[in-house]
Each structure stands twice: as C-alpha cells, then as structure tokens.
Image (cartoon, rainbow, N blue to C red; front, side, top):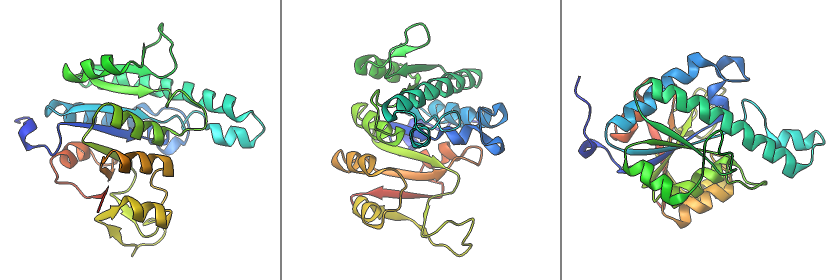
Length: 244
C-alpha cells in the first residue's frame, strides 16, 4: 500500500495532545500495552506521511496533581509529581512508536539527563526537521499549569500549524454523546465560543494561547485505528476550533 505523501496532508507540522487516561484503557489506571500499541502505530503512520509531528502527553493515568492537592498534598509538589508521571508515559510511548518503525525522542521540561533529553527548543526543532517524532514530557516544567497549556505552549514554540486534541469522541458535542444520544456535534467553533460556553475541551489558558498564536485546535477521536492519518488528510470526523 502506498504511503500518503506530505502533499496530500493539511499541515506541514502539527502537535498532538494525548491524555494520560487514553493509555489506561478500561483498566482506568496505569499503562495498558494493548491500548498504547495502536496509538503508537497511528502516530508512526501519520509521521510516515511526511508531516513533522510532536506529541504532548498527560499523566492522569498514573497521578493527578490537582486531585492529590485536594487530598492535602502541597499543590506545587503535587503538580511536580504529576509531571514525573508524564515522563513515564512519554517513555512508554517512545518505545511503542519505535517498535512501529518510527524514530522518536522524549524531551522533558524537567531535566533528567539519565532518562531523556532536556527540552531545548532548537534541539526539538532539529529533531522535527530530521523526521523524528518528538514527545514532550514534564508539562511546562512549572506547577499550576496543565498539560493542555503545555500543548498549546509547545505548539506555539514549535511553530505548529495545528494542534490535534485526541479524545474518546469524534469532536465537540453540545452534551456528552454517551449520555445524550441526540447531542449535536459541532463542525466548527470559535475560540470565543469555547470560552464563553465553558465547553472545557481544554483549559482557558490553552485556548487563549492557541487563539493568540492563531493555532487551530482540531478535536478528534483516537479510538479508531488510522484516525490521526485520516485527520491529517482532512478526511476524518472532527471539530475545528479557530478564529471563526
């Protein structure tokens, strides 16, 4: 089967935001290897089209800083613990991507040179130019910021043309489609719509960063094999959030 060429894709360079929970599968906790393998194959297949691809991954399948803070742990310390969880997920994803045949690098906002590379913007850009998938871990490196905000920040720093938000449903709905079968799926929303309606697709800081840097956010489902490559070719079902 022929590999789609970069000329057929919508964007030259993109960032994909994955939640940590996406790696847990039905277990709800930890890393499910049966779940991470098809996700990694999707990422590898998308990178094989010629698109320069980077990923920001959360850590909620291992540790959620906000919930720990509510339980009595100092908020800043809890957030740092959550950042460490993202490094574990990133290393697992790197391994799976490389098993799928694509070179990947993990770069952490929290320096840990014996484990992975520290985040250096110029080095990350060099990896992308060489066709490597770059997995960003450690959030922004600062407490009180979510990995959604880290995704928007890295997308701006990497000069990405779009931010793909991977979810369990094929876009943004007026209500939870699993609870409300006739919920309406939006084809397009503005940044202002998302903030005004408090749709909580990503946190407000992430939406504002994407808006200020004119980076469209494309919300799609990661559940079906090949969905990311289809989205990059403009063929999948999704919701686009942009300036309207």
